[in-house]
Image (cartoon, rainbow, N blue to C red):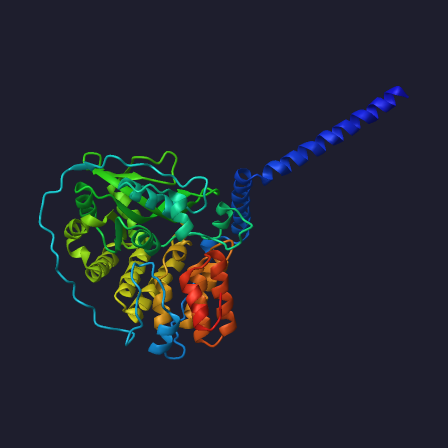
Length: 460
């Protein structure tokens, strides 16, 4: 009898111990730092499950090339005012095709010898770890800290990557839906949130220009493609900002600060690898600098100081690469051609270039790696070109492919916004409103979506 009683007591004790452990685990999981890590891991696991059953690299958009109702200037101006990821806001064209403006030649670069090595001192490394999609805030923080700014990556993110409006979530959880920060958002942060510093971005950069800026003491942020093996072992492509702080010809590469890698400080990026990744983003670069040194920066840029010249130069580079490149890289060359044409408001010609790019995308040699299915997460030029060419169904179809087949959740505010605009243009106002509101769930108070709703007489 005594033994039976003691056995029951032991069993009770074990149950209480197990219950205590479970309760302790729940309490610990609710603590903000631990809860944030669990949220990140859960999101990663959920994404892998979705991608396992619906591989995003297999999703292919096929443009129809068909136009809908003719686009009117008045309607376009009322529904398509947006900040642009190409560092300019395109205006509705008087026609869908315009003559290519000739490049300007001022200011010119004063020829000076570029030294064989320049490595900038005083770089404060900032990583993106412990956050979600923090490449943009981390790189911009490094660039600003270099000049003495005292803020941190969260200070940047609170403005350009605020995430969900759900105040019940902590700051990190709120930022989970927002997958990307556009270049114009980084530039705007510097130009509107600081008084001591300025920023600009241009297309069509080259390595000699980057070296010239570095040799003069100005670090540069570039946007580039990044290749790595995914969890299945296949080569995957994603977009990435890279803070460039030096170069060394004897070692054959640039000195970079990579916020993603561990370790990521003072890495050597070989010139060929650097350029190959940079191609994916039309050789876009950003310079952050003290406001009182702007004339010096513009003189160093030479003709790149003129944004139109830079865009035309990027177009010339794309045309040359179309002739010189082959295989998968041709996709990027044609995509860059479209992006450059959008930047100079030649939307119909841009749409044709993007059509060619998407055709090459469908023929991608997957034996060398997955298709770059994240491309539309970072660049929205095709939406501009199809929308301003009155190809609204192509805008909708491209957004549907991007939102439902290349990502585990439809959380890309730019794609939602452009699909909403196209829905409105074909008369589906309710669908447009739903998309605008969905965009604001990804990026709270995002001005283009707020404005789009207000133009319909609706408060967000």
